Figure 1 (spheres, rainbow, N blue to C red):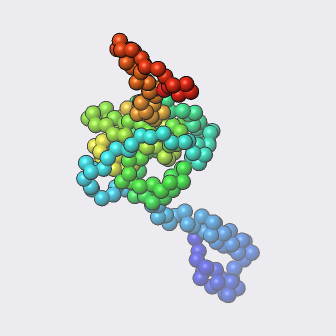
Figure 2: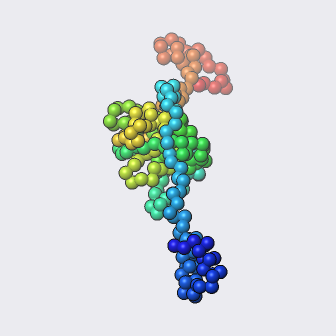
Length: 226
């Protein structure tokens, strides 16, 4: 294809024809439209972070949290495919492939507006409500962690969950990239019920003595017995 310098020379010399001009104009138009496609584009790639001692990073602590409006639109569409968010995480248990995401997304907003920390115990899931808690077990080595789900993804058919970089390190597959895992959602409402002891009404001292065979004393009128 001719350069603009060649075009100027042809025009100034008077030797160009109308057909040649049309061809040159068409060629320059194509260059302006598609010339950049031949230039390699700088695409930011995801990567690993610093190697740290993961033993000092505790699991996420499950606790009851309200489901946020942000990040829970259902259905939603990504790359032409439609996904539905589950109304609850209760009873969710599924095996699949886990991946991880790191430096490319570190410091960026998650689906519910939180800041992603690649060294935090969080994860991305396509259908579990946000926020949710889940136990993730690497079925290849038996390691297990608890994560808080606050993001959407991974949008690959063969992958079920995206863990933070440190989560993948704790499960032992950060270098490999993916691993087969078992995901078990944690019912935080059930945990809360177990943590709260049932209400025990107080018994009046005189009634307690009666239960052991002792005589009960008189109860003054109008006194409330618990």
